[in-house]
Image 1 (spheres, one colour):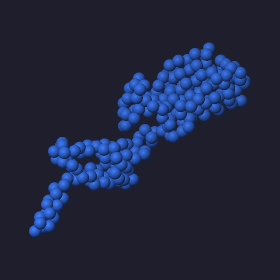
Image 2 (cartoon, helix red, strand yellow; image 1 turned 45 degrees about the vertical axis):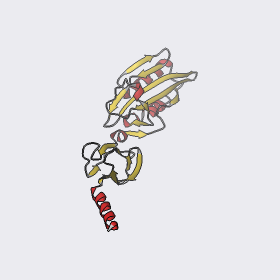
Image 3 (cartoon, helix red, strand yellow; image 1 turned 90 degrees about the vertical axis):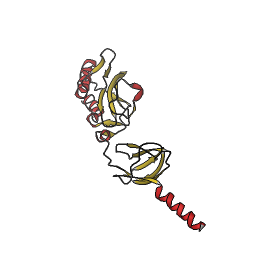
Image 4 (cartoon, one colour; image 1 turned 135 degrees about the vertical axis):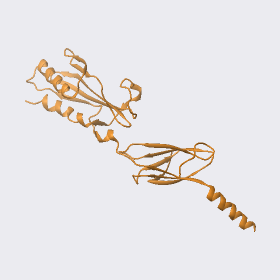
Length: 219
């Protein structure tokens, strides 16, 4: 009789247990619950009735997804299932991974060009890619564009170009393409503390470094 009673109580606990089935359209997406990786593609989460759980689903190249589910006594009633239809990361689709971001590249200018001609050509190349030049000093051979900003669903990318004199003889410029990301949508371009170096560049800038190398050195 006692054994039957214990089995009956266990059965009651089982049918009263609250669970949430978590699944994603990407079967290899990582499922994270309260900071711990718990599965890939799908996971059955058992809820403590007094606790809330932060659920994240992520995969490189895709947008990140988050949700909070709670036990019966901790918050709104949790759904029986959570399904995430994952979409491609539009910032990554609009960019390429490269070793040209945030690095100084030296470009030795064709010896047939004098400083004035070289600077004029440099400015032309810059304006092929950027609308606004923030600083341009021919005497010191220093140029910096304003930040060009593009916002995506879960990211904000800002890009600028810096040109400075490396050597006078032979005339050599340093060219640097700054590429930074915030990890959030619609970040203000002035919020410097929210941006970090990005090892990618937007596709529209993919040829900027090579253009300097070919057009300034061409005989």
